Length: 366
Ligand code: GLA
Image (cartoon, rainbow, N blue to C red; front, side, top):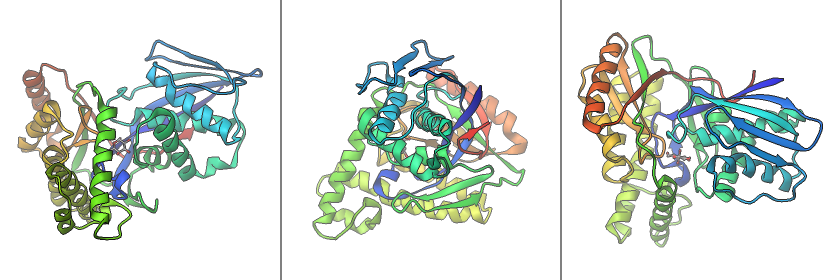
């Protein structure tokens, strides 16, 4: 028996810009998916999860797999199909999953599952791709884009595969160059993660709609300037875009990329006041210009921001529900947790889950 673990991720700043060639600042977290694996001698692959009812039972000798309606199964199926198409090794196995990541909560449970299954298969064969985690992240992104059908960027898969303990990753999503920056809150602050428990309905289609809007905005700017990605544009270039809705989307993307640059410097210099302010500004931009927050996330972030203990708060991940993060004074964190939960639950009728987290290792064979 072997055990593997793939973490979820939080993005500290830089939302919805990975697919626009921008900079992002994620960390892998201490919540994730554990796989207990018994390899088999035949050609069967059985994956079951303690959290989800429908198990996946397939014969690896089957030629092709179609997308299924049980959505979680499409992540492993997509990986298996990719491995087949690219002559990568597959191993028959009984895999038992256990997740303490809120499923569909915007902490990259899907990327964690993709990376985990890839890692299990490559480990069985001791394949040399195991040491090429960037390539693993890329193939997982391709599966999500093509098999699952979400036009996501590389951030989640990259963070899950290449996270480092106590380090944030400043990732250039155009070049895939990654600079690790110490995520050291100096025993003064705590990173609080909060799940709104608002279901992320239609999140995939709205996500793809935002991506299409960015592509349209880029095309209009490209008629005046040779750019490859929207993040290369300047705020002045927005004048070249005709539709006001596309102007707003581009305003978010370009300003968010600048915020990440500043946030990385602030983190490096342990300037947490600036780091927190940039979190607040990012949320505002995601709310007003990118319109991916919604009532629950906005209510939560507003409650956090008005507490004395909080020096910055924002949604994290794709939005449309899901999770938010806050940087909170350590001494006041228990009062903060209590106050925020009481107020959020009262205002939304939902029940807020709160965790404290820090930067952790990426996928591992335990
Ligand atoms: C999802 C996607 C990522 C990224 C974020 C928003 O998590 O999978 O690629 O675009 O949304 O920043």
